[in-house]
Length: 245
Image (cartoon, rainbow, N blue to C red; front, side, top):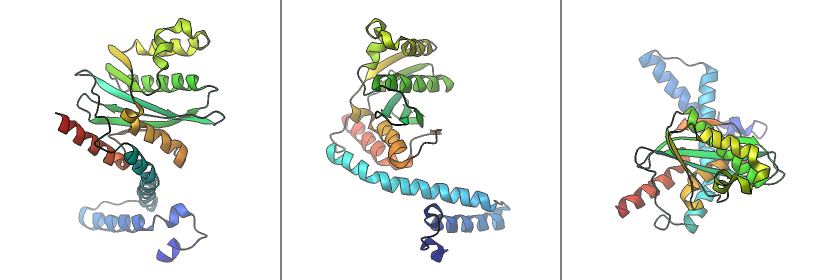
């Protein structure tokens, strides 16, 4: 196993995962001896690769996180802006560049005390303009909230021209088809609102969106809670909120 980890001819994804493979082999051994549980070799390898990928992703993004903290240290970062009681808050962010083959997007859902309920990321097909991308991202997030059966949702994002497209459609005739789809989806909710916030307030959603383009994580998913590699930010934010109470 150790010699394989140093062999340059072995796929890096495999060679770098040897500590996790050893861990899961040992865990499987104990599970089999004491609990009668058994995993296939493919299951062990899959779990080990997943754990290794998450760890290396955390290390790669650590630099970006440290730069963000340097620019906006914990005591200076804005605290969580809560939605009305009984609502959830959907924080939306995106990474878009002209000529890219896809738009990198993410959302985080939080309850009215700031606890993260779910998060998601996805690589959406590219669109020609930034404003179209914003509408595309917002429609994806709204459809996601509907699928999760939330009834009262505050949608928050850092792009300030989206609300005008939805609320004042006459000013954006070229985008009426996309805007009408978004308005139609919003009517499904019992109550909803669109809010513009500073990028620092939705920075964790931004980090997840960046992970799509920076690390090539194009596979979409929805998961409970927040990614483990963002623990530092949510702990800092909770600390600030407690200090302000």
